[in-house]
Image 1: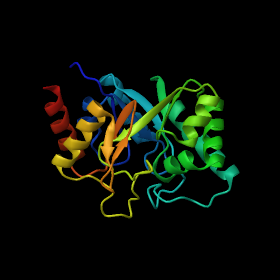
Image 2: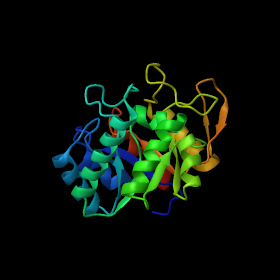
Image 3: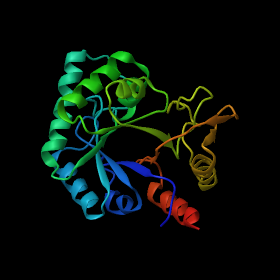
Image 4: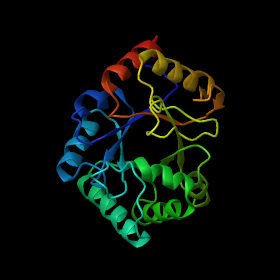
Length: 236
């Protein structure tokens, strides 16, 4: 398949889709215990990725199983540092397959993109444990800037299944229009991203978005079916 796009997905989160979705993607972000997952899930998911030649990445989050890591935490930075180290150490211990990247999950993903102290902490942990890992983040984020300042490789990420505001930020999941649910909408966003490097925002305007990788969420309704449809359509 000759294609000009790279797809990643969040996996190992307990939804049982790994065997179906991993063969369809290029890299995967595996939960490492903060918001979901754990030793057994990590090992199983890494095995599936290795079998399919899919690159693996760590998907750390705030230590918040109750809220699936989707709510910003008022947490002491030392405690967060300890938690992130534990999550990445667990990942590295379980993996005999090369770690390709690190992509924060949920609220940590957004906070590291927008808050200097969180971005700095994540960079610190990555430099200590896996300095050759690629960092996946939103375009023009604080994390992108800090990563480049520390000579780390950055992948700017776009979303196939999420809506954007005019300012480039993702629409909050508290908004009923935060996610794209119809195949028509998903096809349109995928097409404009890979062919024209823009998305149509919630406000109805075009937003330039040059990215290195595209994400589809594993917990999105019908994620496997939708991704199969997109790949079949754009192979033509």
